[in-house]
Image (cartoon, rainbow, N blue to C red):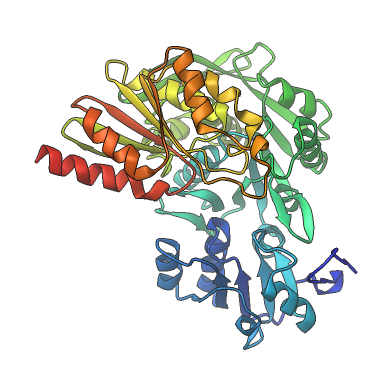
Length: 487
């Protein structure tokens, strides 16, 4: 029996998927993965309900369109009528009212990763894309190209794949692509999600310190990835970015075949003749020093070409021809919120990007500057994740905005449970950037940022908004304001 320090008590014998299951209830249903899973099960004929707090569009509309009834707020009454199975999201704490009721009613339950494994991965070859950076782009690219090659993959990904206008697909083929998150599974299972995904093939793009709310340091992150590598089957394949020294260190102990990719001579797959312009990127892929193919993609940046190279390595390993890979890669439309152009009005281009970790911010800015080399690049940054709102990356952020022509930083919502001296300071970052000679500005609110932007933007500017959240709908509001100004 699992006995938390307080609150709900959940028992291992209830941790199952009963064969008689018809009604499944999701606690925390508005999470990206949870909502997708709910829709997948609904499409298979299950009765699906859910509960969450602050239920609002677009996720409320998505779930409603899928025919899923949502309870706004957590309450024991949400478990009446009694579901056959409850899926507990990792936003749920042991003190949650509904979780306490779940324990007392002894209803079978699973975490989201456990459900994915038991219902969708058990009969497939699971392809897990893991790493600190590039998971969503790489898994989206892999799923799209597998589909283009006629392999009918299933997938569950943390971003909207443009080719499908959604982030999930059940799929009839032998492969199922999963974005392998190292975040914790549930309050009753603090291990990383990706340990539940039984990888047959895995990609590891990078390993850095992140998720400071659950990992103490890089060593604890490495421990999780070691566990992932250790569960690879002997006949599996691990595609690893060996230019990353941490990745190279950890995969040395892999129990399966390792296929390296990157730029170094130690890599099986090497990125060569990379170039980038306003139309995207191009490169040659070399396999063991032999030319494999020439490839083009709309995605800008060397980091995205390395993501593509990892996908090429997987596809080649399972027998897809260079011609098909090249054709499908060129067609790939990208992923929402990854260097996504939201609009251009009056010669001002507005871009939305998910980047928040210092490395991701730096690489994204470098890619955008390569594409828009002759235009002024204004970066608007909102620190919003649990890690970026802590001082852990305070000094690192000073080094990542060098290629931006103007930097605007929003005051983040404070982590009130954290002592003030451990919180990230937007003012301190801007002060440091100004001290380095950067054109940087601090603003406490989105309204203030929009007001300032309308006084400084001019035709030819590129405004790149970086946040992992909605940022008060700043993209649409800015485009509306530009439309009025230039009409």
